[in-house]
Amino acid sequence: MSFNLVLTVAGIGILVGILAMLLNESGRKEMAQAVTIAGVVVVLYIVVQSMSQLFDLVKSVFQLY
Image (cartoon, rainbow, N blue to C red; front, side, top):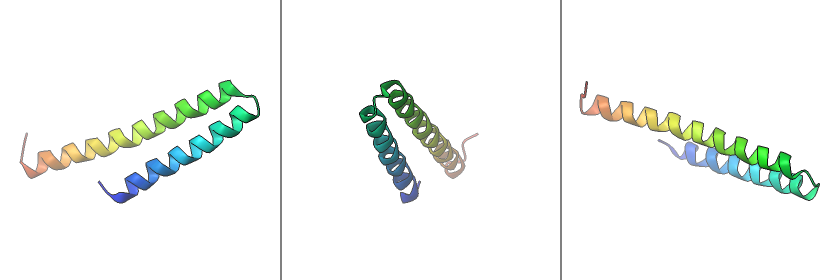
Protein backbone atom coordinates (compact mmCIF):
# COMPACT_ATOMS: atom_id res chain seq x y z
CA MET A 1 0.00 0.00 0.00
CA SER A 2 1.41 3.32 -0.97
CA PHE A 3 0.87 6.99 -0.43
CA ASN A 4 -0.79 7.13 -3.85
CA LEU A 5 -3.80 5.31 -2.40
CA VAL A 6 -4.23 8.01 0.24
CA LEU A 7 -3.95 10.77 -2.35
CA THR A 8 -6.43 9.02 -4.66
CA VAL A 9 -9.03 8.60 -1.93
CA ALA A 10 -8.53 12.19 -0.75
CA GLY A 11 -8.84 13.50 -4.30
CA ILE A 12 -12.05 11.59 -4.90
CA GLY A 13 -13.40 12.84 -1.58
CA ILE A 14 -12.64 16.46 -2.41
CA LEU A 15 -14.10 16.15 -5.90
CA VAL A 16 -17.28 14.48 -4.64
CA GLY A 17 -17.62 17.05 -1.87
CA ILE A 18 -17.36 19.97 -4.29
CA LEU A 19 -19.80 18.39 -6.75
CA ALA A 20 -22.30 17.61 -3.99
CA MET A 21 -22.07 21.14 -2.63
CA LEU A 22 -22.61 22.67 -6.07
CA LEU A 23 -25.56 20.40 -6.77
CA ASN A 24 -27.13 21.17 -3.39
CA GLU A 25 -26.80 24.90 -3.99
CA SER A 26 -28.46 24.59 -7.39
CA GLY A 27 -31.41 22.71 -5.89
CA ARG A 28 -30.61 19.23 -7.16
CA LYS A 29 -30.45 17.43 -3.85
CA GLU A 30 -31.25 14.00 -5.32
CA MET A 31 -28.41 14.30 -7.81
CA ALA A 32 -26.05 15.42 -5.03
CA GLN A 33 -26.97 12.35 -3.01
CA ALA A 34 -26.39 10.11 -6.03
CA VAL A 35 -22.96 11.66 -6.60
CA THR A 36 -22.07 11.12 -2.94
CA ILE A 37 -23.15 7.47 -3.03
CA ALA A 38 -21.24 6.90 -6.27
CA GLY A 39 -18.13 8.42 -4.69
CA VAL A 40 -18.42 6.15 -1.67
CA VAL A 41 -18.82 3.10 -3.92
CA VAL A 42 -15.74 4.03 -5.97
CA VAL A 43 -13.62 4.57 -2.85
CA LEU A 44 -14.80 1.27 -1.34
CA TYR A 45 -13.92 -0.51 -4.59
CA ILE A 46 -10.40 0.96 -4.52
CA VAL A 47 -9.92 0.07 -0.84
CA VAL A 48 -11.16 -3.51 -1.33
CA GLN A 49 -8.74 -3.99 -4.23
CA SER A 50 -5.87 -2.73 -2.08
CA MET A 51 -6.86 -5.00 0.79
CA SER A 52 -6.94 -7.95 -1.59
CA GLN A 53 -3.42 -7.15 -2.73
CA LEU A 54 -2.33 -6.86 0.91
CA PHE A 55 -3.80 -10.25 1.80
CA ASP A 56 -2.13 -11.84 -1.23
CA LEU A 57 1.19 -10.37 -0.10
CA VAL A 58 0.72 -11.68 3.44
CA LYS A 59 -0.15 -15.15 2.10
CA SER A 60 2.96 -15.20 -0.07
CA VAL A 61 5.24 -13.93 2.71
CA PHE A 62 4.09 -16.55 5.21
CA GLN A 63 3.64 -19.19 2.50
CA LEU A 64 0.04 -19.90 3.38
CA TYR A 65 -1.87 -22.21 1.05
